[in-house]
Image (cartoon, rainbow, N blue to C red; front, side, top):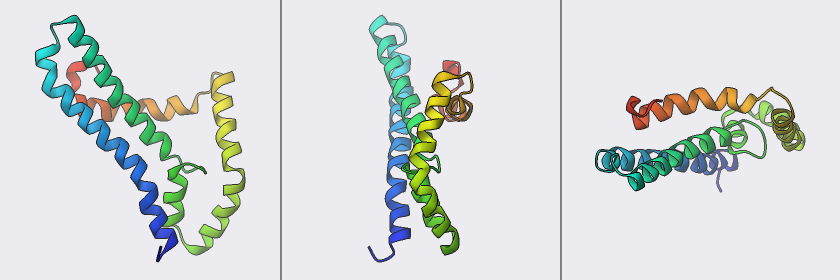
Length: 137
């Protein structure tokens, strides 16, 4: 790698971008097949699985973009900041996984669910855009 910080940024973007591409492909399949499958029980189940693929890929994309190590969002942030800020971010890299684990535990054991607060609006907007308002998003 010629420029490790910038190259790492591009590598880290690959995961979230691939999730977005998979969500778009799943939504396209949904929009193409929905008129033909909506009247059959097996077809409805298949459409629900496609909708789940869209939702899951959006959630994975957003989760992966969190700017906490070891997630891709942190490495993207590292590639965008100044050298001074990059050095400070290296200190966060030591405790980032513990912070992430703490947020997961906080969400699991309390009514404070940071992830739902962040995920739900984004999933609704992107899901609604990709699948269309006709599915109740």
